Image 1 (cartoon, one colour):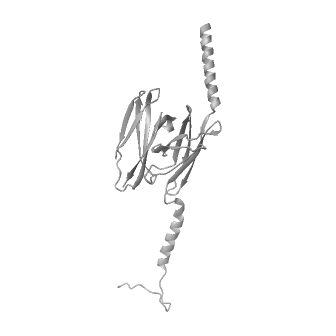
Image 2: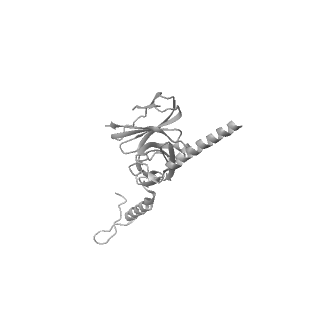
Image 3: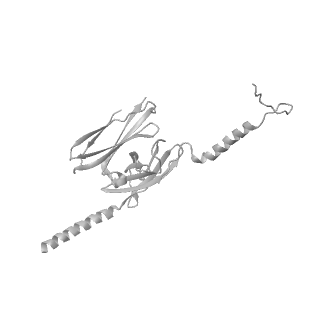
Length: 162
Length: 94
């Protein structure tokens, strides 16, 4: 009984020591923001910090997945001296449809941190341009229906026999 | 095209079911291929993983980038990077 208690106390002390070490290091945190621009380009940025301070040269790995969880791309990038990282890439138009979810993770001193965000890529021909295209098409069609007139103002009738 | 990744467990514990993700980016930074392999390695053991994606005739010319990462599981399944488990290489398509 006494031995069990001693072992339990030692285990508890070891646990406390381990927790103290982690608290002294502070939790590892990784942030992520993503933006999309024309031509299906995606850029994601963020920062790796520990105890509020930057983790310089942290290696950040990433996965990009489509709406149906298909793996679109993976890779890694390295944070700079301020813990900031950035990566830009262009997804294929034929890739699985978005929105895409970007998962990032970093490890440092035996700790890991992960984060994710979602982004909708903007195709090469943005949907917002459709109304303008329709308007221009209508203008072209309308201009073809205006009858031509000669210098005297007489309407030109196409020769049906020609 | 043949991409060969050599994974070595130079740590102190065996590596069980590590996920190796390899992506190839063309000269326009477009990911044209992504492959996955799962491998287990004892301490000091080495494994060679080969992938053979086909480049289309219309492939962009220029410098391509290959990146490989080793994870404990997919990131979307809660995996984390294996320490030191990243590698990259470039090659040129003329």
